[in-house]
Image 1: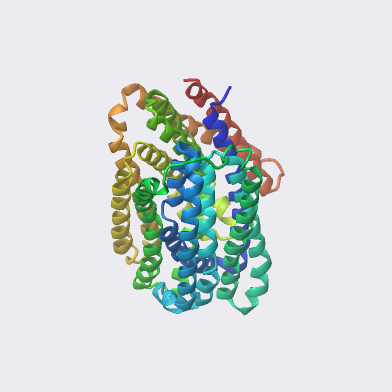
Image 2: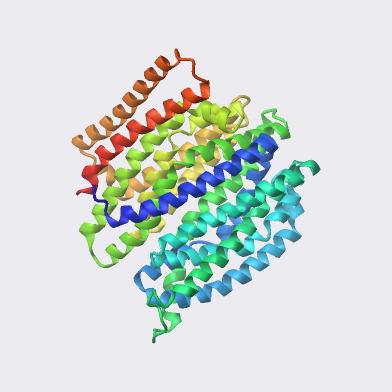
Length: 499
């Protein structure tokens, strides 16, 4: 089966993301087993604030610069230099302010012991936005291999720092161990930026980007800033929602009678374990989105509408089938993931509750890219904003009810993604395009994955009669499931790639 260029580039991106996520998962497992669910809760609380500040500084500039560079390659470099100065100044100012006001920020999050963690995160505010901007520029040049390698290097250095520092700091207390863990965010970004910069400087002549007379930068700035703001409004919603969740969830859990320690543990189990597992499969659709956005933007700009819709249709089908396969897997093996991987038994129910996230997130990301390419950047923002609002209402009302902590958190997350995805579908009129034969195909997909799951379960029960260790039986069962899913994916998507 000959894959289209976009799928080949997606696989390059996906392979790198698999490595990055695998390294990150090792770090999560290592840290969870060392500092427990409470430590993971504190870690996630601090990162919710960090992600919000990071998005405020960089906004949609990296993506907007990439989309601009994909259309005007020679002019992208000048804009990168201009905005690099802005990123350095903004990052430096925010880094100093965060370090100075770490105590009020920790009190705002409801855990004064986060003061040291916030201070350890402040240097990353300077380095990471600049790295994101450089990656956005190289994304516009379609230099995906270098970007992928830089991400692997960044993650390796980050997790390496975590694994070296956390054991040294753990004796001083959980908050110091968590603070040492977040230092890796800065070291990873610095090393990755240095290597990526060296690559670009050495290969710039080969890329054919030598200096030539170009229009004034003033003609490009308004277009890029406008696109950046539109993208930032949409992307800012998720970190803003995460930050609000970090404030609301522990407080509402305590209203329900949960102690501060237990509320941090519950928050850590959902955001640091269940969500990590649920979002892991979305690296495939994320990689597809990464390469798709630049290509379909150029297709729409050049009025190649047939090519545009063909690529969009292919991406949607990949997101649907992959989301189903990974969702069934997460639901079936939630207990094994919780106990054998993270060593925390209480994570099983939250993981099962979020099993449909890979499907919802994948479809939302793909449809958002399609809308952005059509220059309809406000539409995804409205849908996501509505989802965030509903999420807030669910969290505030349900979590305070005794016994509904995990259910309220899971329902809020699911409804956020479901509403955002449905809004994008409505805007693209995809619901109107669903005919009877398409419904039949979608139902067949669901039934096939259910049949695979039943068959694998029956085979696993027959293996239980053998005198094999439990771990070996689980591994064999998982490999069995993956084999049949991979076979069906190949058959199911073959016709899509040949369209």
